[in-house]
Image 1 (cartoon, rainbow, N blue to C red):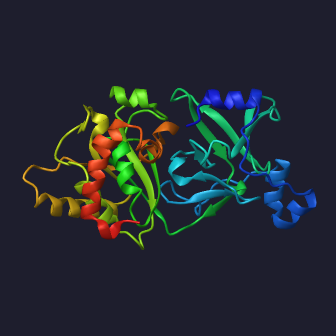
Image 2: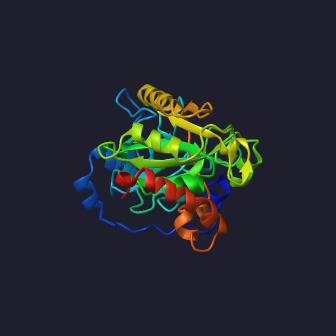
Image 3: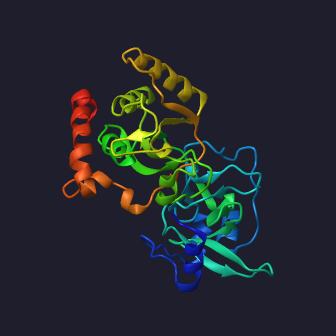
Length: 323
């Protein structure tokens, strides 16, 4: 998770190394871009504002560089604002954007460019409302919106290490990330979340193919692979960060979750305490939390004592759903 100090460091000491570089002559860029795209991305001229066809905040889409097609931003990191430009809180990866000093308007700004092809994208600013947070103000003319059949879901059920280990083994689930949702501040750290003062829950966010696994099945698996009847508790600790929660993205998902909860409740004596909350933001957890079970299963007691028994039970229940 990038913070303002990281951006200042990139500007003063050098940008991150991109996964690849794409370089073309000026004429080659003219040949593949519209006049408007070329003018803005290669010459930093002109501006295009949002219109009625611009993507809404909750659309599950991604945004590529219009010049080189490098993936830059995800809709889950798009902020819902009144600005005439799409604003993101984070890039898709730390090394996709490059940062440069910009005094072209008579005052100091930080320019954001594509780190793959040097296309001008816009500017990044410190979010003064939240310490250390970022606002990437990106011109829509520099972006290519990518539609796809995949959807995202965000669940919390105790420790995210356990939940991640379960869902990454499901057919139709393509990517699982650990992070934080449902709190009061942006870009929280693990220490801040663990204190309980930010209000975030430890969650997983994953991309899935609804043609392979349904949202209803995902809810059912979630509710039957942790104890949804207990409150703010996981195997080795307590706190609101461990609450059972489903962050739905639309009315249909909420209704599906309510229906599955009702079905599961009929089989349980104690009431289900899983919260249903409208999704707002997901903040990626620190790198050492990602892919935790696979990276630590042979060297961590927590994995052998807590996660392994959970996985054995999960595999017995859902053998037909495994990759």
